Length: 226
Length: 222
Image (cartoon, rainbow over all chains, first blue to last red):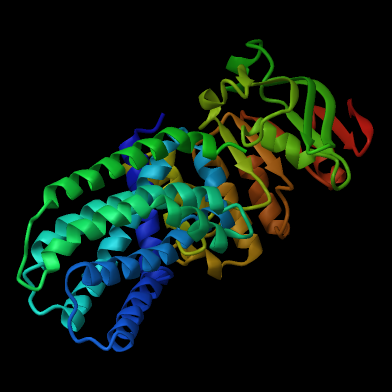
């Protein structure tokens, strides 16, 4: 058997190299997020947002932008035979799940590097919320990537892939989004950053991450069977 | 390698193999034994189940019924033991269009645990053999179908498999390409081969065994 870390590095490196060359996912995700912020800015006719409204705008935008990337996560494997290549190799097939989820976390982090500063410029009066927001973003990204990779791998063989991913994924990530917005809300209060129940919601996010990461790792081998 | 393994049991043993898709049987009661190092040529019209047979032997499909033994491993239960011992050349080249030829081969080398200088030497040896060294850094979507097939042959033999499963290996290849392919995946390389083909004139002379599949007809081994 090939060591899992070697296979992980090979699959992750291949995905990142292909994305850097073709820019098939990231630009679409970033453009969607920025356009959504512009629409919210003029649709709500507000120059600043705070509390739950700010958290809701941020997370709704990031979630739908993420769906664009999740939809495309396994397209190369499906269309170019990568699934067969990986099934023929002497590797633990769950490595494909880990590598794809890691690639998705990297895409989401890159998206947020672009989208969150623009959100702050459009809607926040101060940047004080941003440092603690990083940990919320990171935990939510891991959960979104775990659930997204699992659903994307199941939907990719369907002709209705673009429809299936949001239909199945969105209900599954409702608990994640509740926890993410609840953790974000006190960071964006008008009176300044508050940490009321911040730790509790971080633990909920962590628990969600753990459940979906373990679930994906456990069932992925079966999903690759014919 | 093949001579060492002769007498250690058949490379492929099928007893009453059956595979159905829904209520349609793609393979029905296929029984045969192929010795280590031999070439089995599979003939039959479109839809007779040739590719299905190859994918079952490659562990990519589960049989519906019957017994399947490949290189001493019982399928599907021991499929994990076989991975890395099979070189599979199917209809799809299993190459990423956005990676170069060399990058594709490096990726497959890593998946098969071939690392560093050994991997690079093997990749250059194969690219030289298929006369693609000078185009190896181009992305494969720029390749012609024949060049992709040559690269797919490199991918198939990169890890020096014991069993080659070849589905129309000459497809898209010109005369020179066919000769090149023969040096890499032809008989006498020490590996057991299963060749699915519509070109019996080319492959029958090198066959030790022939399996004829037909729609709604029993499989015949000769």
